[in-house]
Amino acid sequence: MADKQPHLNGAYYGPAIPTAEPPRHRPHRERGCCCCLFGILWKILVVLIVLVGLAILIFWLVVQPRSFKFHVTEADLTQFDYNANNSTLDYNLVLNFTARNPNKKLSIYYDKVEALAFYEDTRFSNDDVITHMNSFRQYTKSSSPMSAVFSGQQVVTLDNEQVSQLNEHKNEGVYEFYVRLNFRIRYRLGDVISGDFKPKAKCHIKVPFANNASQTFQTTKCDIDY
Image (cartoon, rainbow, N blue to C red; front, side):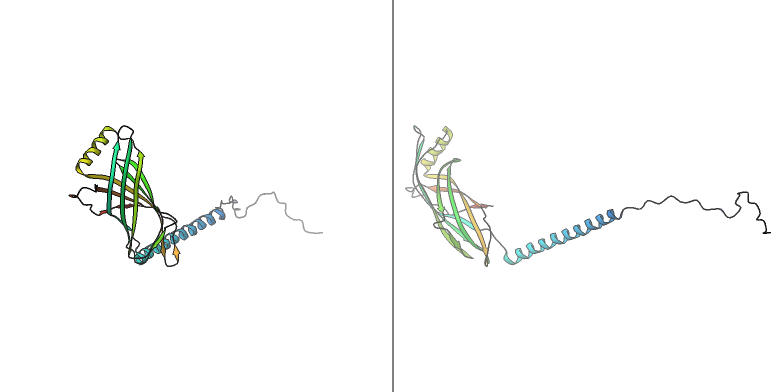
């Protein structure tokens, strides 16, 4: 007969069984990948900004671009009469200008130039100095003449103070004008031509009347704004 096995009462007297630990939460790998990608893109952006800055600096040092210079060299005023009864102004004013390109490597295309004439902050005339018919290229380190003719009759409303100022200028034989020129130009470096630039030349001038022998016009430099 087979040996009988000892009866077990269900109790366990061996080493303690370790309690199962709950699963630990691990951060998603996707979040780490996003942070890594953002860091790479940020470094690329910084490198691009540095490279663009260096390119602009090198261009500036090599080309040394400068704005053109603009002067009113001559002025001829033969008529400037205001009729307060019908608010009409009869005028004849001719101005000669000189535009100078001081650049050593950049030439300038003058595509369009419009001149506006003001008296006592009131515009009384305009003239197309440069159009597509006479546009030109100005080479480096050179000067070019231009002319504006303001002639005709215009209805202009002047108040009492402006009329008083006009009479004072008439007695003195010297008139003060403000002339603004609107440009549309392009720059050229080698075979590369830039897009349009639209600077403005602002000229404050004192013009003696034609029969005023005691006064002569002085060449006046104009301010250039881009």
